[in-house]
Image (cartoon, rainbow, N blue to C red; front, side, top):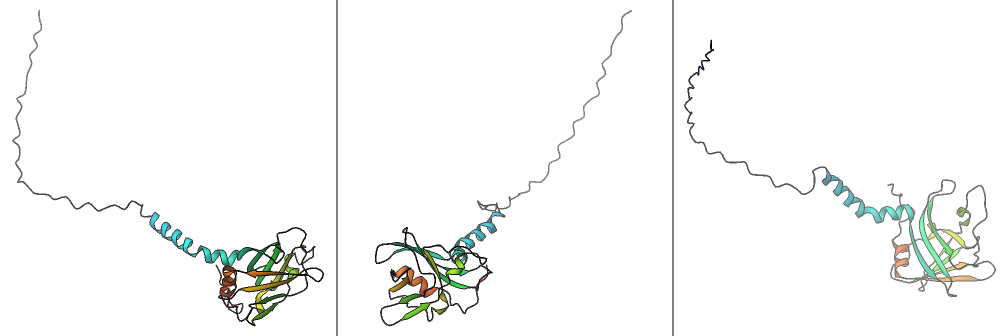
Amino acid sequence: MGLCWLRLETPQTETPAMSAPAVSVSAPPVARQSPWPPRLAPLLLGLLLVLTLAPGLALAAEGQRWSLRDQDDNRWSLRIFAQSDPAYPSGDRLRLSALTPGVAVDHAGPLLISDGTGGAWTLANRSEELVPADGGALPEGSAQFDMADLLPRPSGALPLALTLPLSGEAAAVLMLGPEETGALHAWRDPGAPAQEG
């Protein structure tokens, strides 16, 4: 006896499409995006500020340095900076260091500065500050001087001659060029409060 399968199909009723009225939708204007992420902009501004102030910060922290030659063609390093060792009195210093081997300085005599028109300054020797306060041998070719007596500051327009006493009776004479003279002229007044970074 055969089985008979009946396939019943439910009629599909089509839902009439609802016709909605046409609405004109305008897309909001697309904001122009910056090529830099929003959090990066303050960092870039901060970096720009640091780069702008960097020369001043370097000056305060490390001072300035030049290479000079004396009348005998010996090479010297000139450095001006703020003395920061708490073991010694604070203040601004001028340091001269021989770059030519065998040159020995006088660690007691003052440094004489003149501008050739009658201006003259005498800076006290502070070579003891070159080594720790608890002692040590002073470097033969370096001497350090207190800039407190460099007042009024030399003119930035006149060349300066530095007369550095050497061991024995000799002296080294170093002529400063416009850059070095300008730096001494512009160096902060020792009586002014130090800027803190």
